[in-house]
Amino acid sequence: MIRVLSLGVLFVMLLLLAGCVYQSKDGNEEAPAQSPAADCVINGRGFYFVKDEVRQTWTEPLAKLLSNVRVPYGDGRGDILGYQASMDPHAPVIPQSYSCGLLDVTGDGIPELLVFPEGFTGSSGTATYYVYNFYSGQKLGSIEGGMGQSICFYYNTASDDLDLVGEYWIQSGWSWRGRFTDKIYYDDMLMECWSSNYLFIEHDIDNEKIDVVEEASDELSGTEAWLEIYPNTEYYVNGSAVSLDKYYSEYERFVRESIRIPETELILFAWRDVADSEDDYAVRGRKMAEALVNSRQEFLLP
Image (tube, rainbow, N blue to C red; front, side):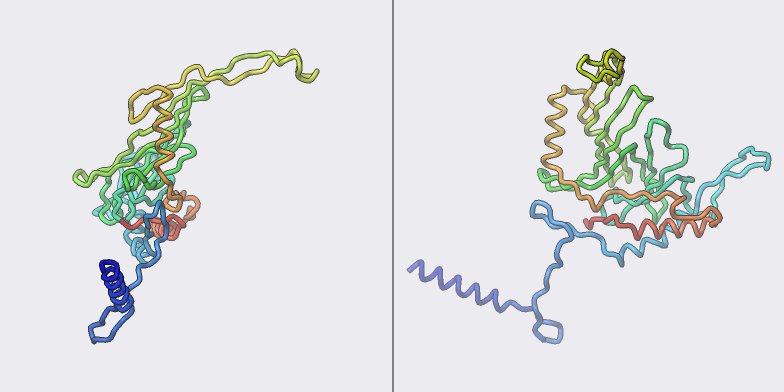
């Protein structure tokens, strides 16, 4: 009897589902609304990218801020007396820079403007990026980068959340290398962002003179060669020195649990690639804004 009732309930439910329709305001029946397909599915969770028509609305405020640059003025003899805005002295300004990019540091679906200021790099390869709300012009902080850099969103399958992660390396001469995996944070209360070292490994590098083995060719046999060695290596997790095993245990956990979303990787545009030297500041700003908005980089909806 219970089995018969269960089958009957199931049959009624199927009928209700089959007949589920929505009514429009005029009383006409409509087909049920269909959820759009996710742009990206990871571990069963769907992610959506900001649509192009929304992206285009960023062009005007971006162009306005990018055009208003803090430029020096002098006495005509090469001495700098001060700085002034290139367009509007009453509007927010940004520093002169090598390149610019967009990155959603706040995670609200609207990216921030990243500016790589002139002078904030060197032979070590380090790079500092100022972060701006391009609607208000407010500076939100800065984040770090370097050589071989990739700044990208990762889906953390353990926490079911998104992490903004930067990976890069820097050098000190030829005898030292540092490799960084940073996490980038934003505090809503402080309205401030920053980079924090998550995984960091540093190497001292040296050369050791060796003799070429006898089995080598007659031309090389008996000559000297140099072998690169690493006399000291230090490992850090979240800023604290750890053993090799603890470092790689955390590294392996990151690789296992964090899935990179490559479409969200930061794309930088150098000014020399988007604007001409004879362009005025307004034209330069608009060209950079259009390059940023129309790039292949994707931005996640919250």
